Amino acid sequence: MRNWFALLAISLGFSAAAQTYPSQPIRLISPFPPGGSVDITARLIAEPLGAQLGTRVVIDNRSGASGNIGMEAAARAAPDGYTLVLNTIPLVTNQSLFDKLPWDPVRDFAPIGMVATSPHILVVPPRSPARKVDDLVQLARANPGKLSYASAGVGTTFHLCTEMFKDATGIFVVHIPYRGGGPAVLDTLSGQVDLSFPTLAAALPHVKAGTLRALAVTGIARSPLLPEVPTLREAGLKDFQFSQWLVLLAPAGTPPELVGRLNAALRQVLNSADVRAKFEAQAFESLITSPEDAGKFIASEVPRFARLIKTRGITAN
Image: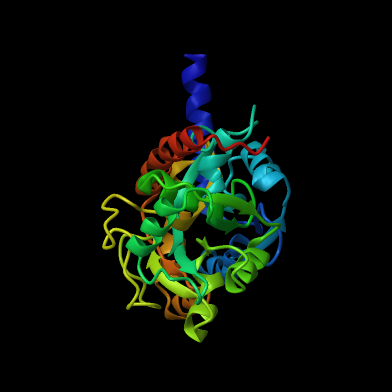
């Protein structure tokens, strides 16, 4: 009987808190350095999200260890709706890339909703003889180990996307890791490497200028920013899908009524013309989901990337 009263008291406490929520600023953890896609997106949604909720949303940059520092801080925060975290693909890959990670992407977080999505893009230097995906695949098969690709570093989306492409096509292309996406794109431009899979945002100006040749985008559908560029699925890789996405999360145990309140506010933000225009300037599109659908998506991405990382022998340790 005592336990029943205790549970009732907790439930009533949560209900009272939900009625007055939010009564203080909300902290939004960005687990990556300023200037990257996660930090930029966090800053784009913080003000309008705060306006929807009637409070301020304050960005807390907790970068380091491929996002693990910020994610651990978020996982350990009180589940009261006053700490949120924004993350992207490392949310579902770090468990496989690092040993003994102190946080789990499914166990330790309550999804609020997906936020945005953008494909990567397969590009080659202008001097490359490859003008379509099949040309590149045939060139790599005829010259195993002689072609190289640039990435932004081991375990980055540039790297994982290319390894997924290699796994799907069976080609052998040498990995050249760089310290960031900028140098990787520059050496693809100059022809120091033969191909790369940068983010659409990183490659778009160069594709538009003709200094990079786009062969395909990695999403399910063509990008409205480059409608003439086919998808890898259209190029023959029927099951290929790799998109950068961002998801808003709260610590596990956050009351469902607060999760619902946050999701409703997020939907309003993502539906606004102003935010959509700002996303487009970053080569992103709004991605609106329920908390349940976001959770199912995250849960499905974990084993998909775990298989890729294991198959390709990738490790960040």
